[in-house]
Image 1 (cartoon, each protein chain N blue to C red):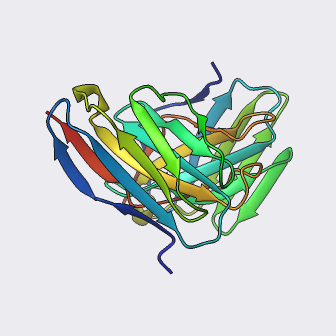
Image 2 (image 1 turned 90 degrees about the horizontal axis):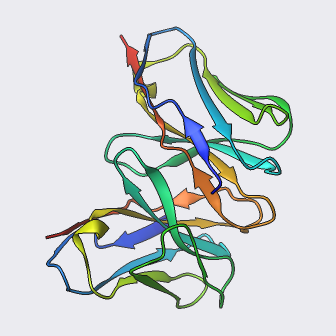
Length: 111
Length: 113
């Protein structure tokens, strides 16, 4: 059973701080990794995709991938109260069409 | 710019009743998916359709059937609803299945009594 593991949180950070969200996965051959944001009562929204080792930056968001350690992370700089949400890590399985999701980390940004 | 549209948004069923959840996308995507989301368990894949004319089981297909009616529409049917199927159901689409970037509908809150 392929798995994606996340700390459920909640992770609480003050406004303006860096929030660091982490994820590990079991499928060693996976090549595609995603972060989704889900506000309470809403549907998941794709915020970052990463396919190669290293960092990928998009505005205040940075995704980091280390395939050797099977580890993906999301950094949110200058965190805002509007960033308060559940962040879902997702991994596409090797050679197939399924995307497996972690259970999500709840983030609270305190004003 | 509707994206992915799901109906209904809310539904209450009695055990044993049947119903169909409808999903349509207007992004000309090839692949469509049905997920369920339960507290503490994240999103679990029920069925998917990598391309028009194909459907395959996901992680939790038991008790469900699907139909890829055309490129735009992908329906999920519960033939005999059970309380264990109480959940939030999300339809999603992606341009091509091999990429995996998913766009979600707004969800259906289903309660089975």
